[in-house]
Image (cartoon, rainbow, N blue to C red; front, side, top):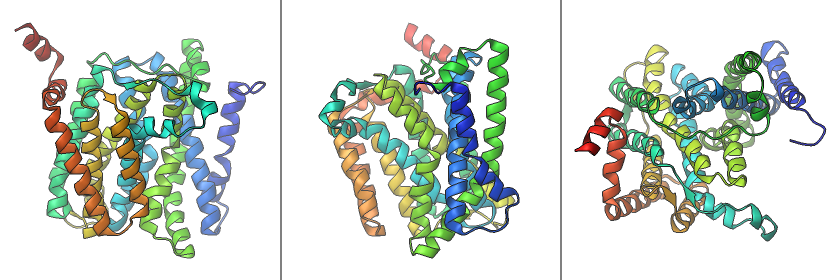
Length: 400
């Protein structure tokens, strides 16, 4: 934290960034779409930081096995609100844009971190971490992510997201919560403002965390949807594809706290914990967020299953391929330089090749690489399946 700036001042300044967006949302009248996009986007980002600080501090009062899942859930709240909004109002063409962009951003950065850090200038060399290794307990996130990705092949093939898909994916998320509550997961120690909050007396800390969670959730609920709508309107004004703006601009804004936390953990040589934070967020997106979209569509203006246009099928297939490649690359619980370089190259090429055929070809490349790595490390696949079994059952199998 900067010298002379207290943690209370940091919180106050961050909360102040939410005021213009709230002001425009609650009674300032009409505003140009670019101005609304900037103010509401700033409000969403600031609220997400407040929410992340509060959740990190709350690990002092919550069972450590659930901390990672809870932090991951609140971290996807801004994207979830935007995605559910488009599903509810029947804009099926935009439903998958934000979700696929967020998952790719989390997993692409997760696996590509060593390659990104290798590109840093020489003066940053002392800050570069060693090998990025995951604790064995984080096989659970990999297993949940693999399950969600594999089941998502069904709606890609059928061209629709059904209530059955939603029930299965939400069920996988429920299984994740049950297993993570009984697994000894090492949570990342709070850093910065969150560390100051965690150091407060228990009664004071709980009041602060409840206040920050309540305020930030309110801000997100009020400004996330106007932010998404203003992104669409701004794209129409400047001639940029609204789908691409929703897929990349909105996730960069809403995932900023997670990316910052992961980067700070990296600089503190906690690379494994940084990878775990991003994995948990992606697993929550692929199960809970994706699973509730057909339900929101059915409750709102939609009739029948949520349709997926050919472009959306390709985008979801590309995300499935990236997710399975990320799982395969982490089967040995470490991020190799080769996999990181491949992920960085392919992830960058997504932005340069917007055509559907090119993105389909990238999806095939991801799937082929994932299959090749999984076959080479097939002994590690059994460990992923074991991570989904109850702890008692695992102990019995180990004993025998």
